[in-house]
Amino acid sequence: MADAMAAPGAGLEPPPLRRHTRVLYGFGSAAYGVKDAAFRTFLLLYYNQVLGLRADLVSLAILIALVIDAISDPVVGRISDQLRTRWGRRHPLIYASAIPAATAFLLLFHPPDGLSEGALFWWLLATAVLVRTLITFYEIPSSSLAPELASGYDERTGLAAWRYFFGVAGALGLAFASLYIFLVPTPDYPVGQLNPAGYAKLAWAGAVVMAVSILASAIATHHRIRFMRAPPPEPRGGLAHHLGEMRESWTHKGFLAILGFGLVKFTMVGLSSALALYFGTFFWQLGARELAILALDGILAAGAALRLAPHLSRTIGKRNGAIAMSFVVALFGTLPYILASAGLFVPKGSPWLVPALFMLQFLVSLGGVTTMVLVHAMIADVVEEQELKTGRRSEGLFYSAHSFLQKCVSGLGVFLAGLLITAVGLPEKAKPAEIDPMAAQHLVDLFVPIFAAGTLLAAAALLFYRIDRVSHAATLARLAARTAAAE
Image 1 (cartoon, rainbow, N blue to C red):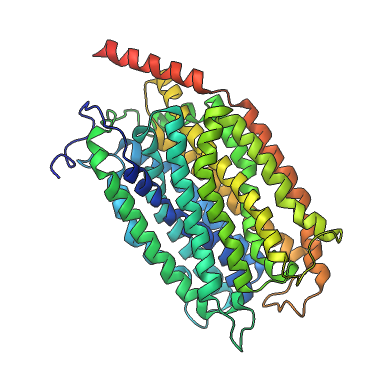
Image 2 (cartoon, one colour):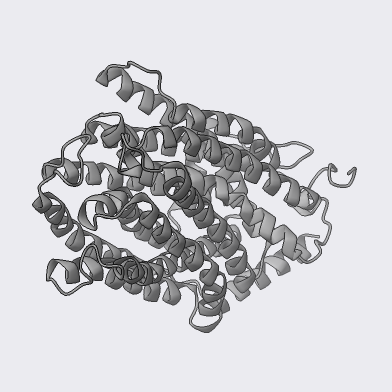
């Protein structure tokens, strides 16, 4: 334990990263997945259809919370890059986030009884900001560990795959447990996903997963602290100097391509995730347990991506693999709605409807997770290229900017979903058997072209990313030569 607590950056050569360390490091992302499941899938439905808050107000609160949270990302990233402790730059922040984040998640799903519409809006906004900000103190430092845990071009893809596997498993595992176990139908609530009692159980399950996964990830990587780089010298120049370094890092051409991709991609993720339960409930007319079964496709897809993402990295490269998988998402993410609208899909109510949707959604999830794994690994490759140019390693700044964008535009996607729901006239506390079926069809008609065009536009942005295996190897060689010369 004394070695693990020694000052980091002592110039020790790190041993190979063991499999259990890679797995438990990735397991920490289950906390992020739980948070995503709440914000992308359940909060809009819960506050709108269960508690009765207008959809546009719910989506507005979520959007404001995401923007406020996103502003904190660069701050946390900068703190994470500059922190000086015996436990290095990242781990103190990770440890400190676990219990407060879990507690805030409980509050999010436990508003006091009897709140007015205005008070309920402010409760949602305040607790949503608290949850997301506290998770940031885990996610940004944890993501920033990746370039130091793994330096190889393909090894990083494998490490990112474990993070995304557990992120998806956390999100969809909570969704499955909620829809299959917690949100059960009762005589008063024949549609299980509208049963308010189940959301308290959802909150407790999510809080426990958050705390356990964050702490397990921190403990599993604690022994690597002594192999990590020493904190950089204390920067001089005040705020202007900090802002200058941020601008210098974020204007890297390859990183700008990733940001362009994320700008549109995460908007589409927020839109589709927020509408998933609405489509399942009002368009496909499925029950909670049928929706729970559909949630499993993402977990299986994340498992498949553990193999597919490194394979694409080795064969066609990270960028080309991400572009190819984006086309898969655009095609199969819209195909069932197009076929159903034309009367060519499995009829609603058929026992074959869930299997057919499961198969197509598996392909969408596989394409989506694989794309995000590859892009996450691409950010790590930008770190060394920027270090070669500036002499600084700014993992926290790069990952915080990516997280900043993800949160802002995911919130924009949720906000857009709320506007679409309001535009088609879907009422609050609606019962599926009583609404106009054309309202759900109009929602589909608006969603399909927006989602397809946005996903393909995101893929096009990656064409401007130029780092590949050869250029990355050359960068590492030049950095090694520079270090040797300095020594």
